[in-house]
Image 1 (spheres, rainbow over the protein chains, first blue to last red):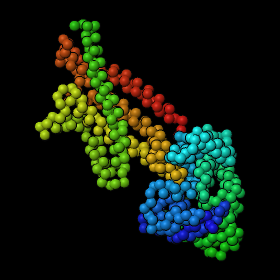
Image 2 (cartoon, each protein chain N blue to C red):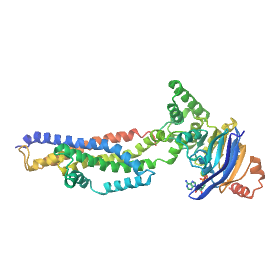
Image 3 (cartoon, rainbow over the protein chains, first blue to last red):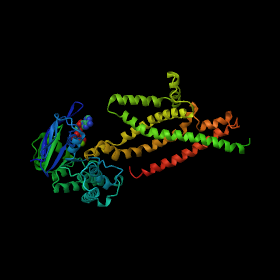
Image 4 (cartoon, rainbow over the protein chains, first blue to last red):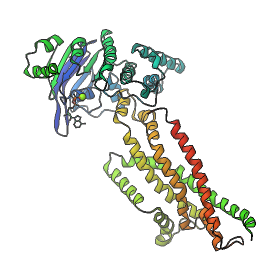
Length: 260
Length: 227
Ligand SMILES: Nc1ncnc2c1ncn2[C@@H]1O[C@H](COP(=O)(O)OP(=O)(O)OP(=O)(O)O)[C@@H](O)[C@H]1O
Ligand SMILES: [Mg+2]
């Protein structure tokens, strides 16, 4: 069974339809790359999946659990929305680390708050220590063990993005989404971030990666989706899409990249 | 009376007046700092009538002199309803002045808060949301300190202005330090026709604003650890 089933997602802003019925599924451990020209709705799709936008129409099912069935069940409590969100993680283009906390504290903040909100919390002290242990482990995993006590402004963009990845990972989302994780970075810093994402793919983290890094998508993704103007034009393996696409629109898009 | 004889009498009177100045300052600060936040939330409300009403009130309060507001609040109930609700004497004047000051400053503060809250990038809130935080958690754990950092410099300006604005309460005869200094021109405690006590009040303001400036700079520096 697919870990994620997305059916007929539609989203309009002020009467302009931005997502015109998006369907796809994702298998456990699969890495999906989403490519497409600017304005095609890639960010909007990720934001719908993370419930940052109210989806007008469509279904989102994770592990057989229906998280969204719009417009039928539009009115959901904040608690339900938060629970649904936790199935997904999102890494932003602009990192969005909390500037007043150190790298370590950025990672620990959300699990600490979730711990406070629970009545059945076991022993608080051990739980706190456990959160810190896991946060340090994740910093190590993204290669920043020695930067635990640095504030975001003391870190490079690439380092900030790696902290942001660790911050998303500590909540153990079923599906981790990336919105152009390297677009805000200087070229020499993209490598360190892509390396972390690649290692996650090797560990079979289920991921959706919106990216303009075609070589990376081709290399890391199990499957690629090409979006244009609010629809999925084509999906398939990287070999199919990058090597032997039959679609005119895909060809045009890719040829623009090859010229650059 | 020689200057040496005048000095202790004058200083005693000015100290008493300055105590009233300080009371008005602290009561205003303590009242207006939280009230301003409530007004700021009102003006940012997604419920249109509330935000319009709030902005209208803020516009009126910021668009008219505090001195007029003091006079209206102090005299209006007595003149119009024939019911001088403030009571007579210094405590009534203080209450009226405190209400006028708190409301006026809360409106100024609310605009500073609103600017501060809106200047925190949306991505901060969204990052909190995707991590499953509640809006309350996001406000207190993510947004608030960033807002505080941004508003400390403009708030410092307003607070220094407030110290000096307390002298406007003289208009309803609140016995603050200017009133105390002026009294020696008309005659008080056997001293009359001297103007230096009034000029001398400036030192009180100068020293107090100096102390506040140092404290607020300290606060600003304590928030320097992040950007
Ligand atoms: N909040 C919004 N209000 C109105 N229009 C919006 C909003 N967000 C996005 N849009 C519009 O939706 C369209 C798709 O935007 P989106 O950000 O999803 O594109 P994208 O594929 O991520 O592009 P890019 O590659 O440039 O990031 C754009 O035309 C954009 O102007
Ligand atoms: Mg985008």
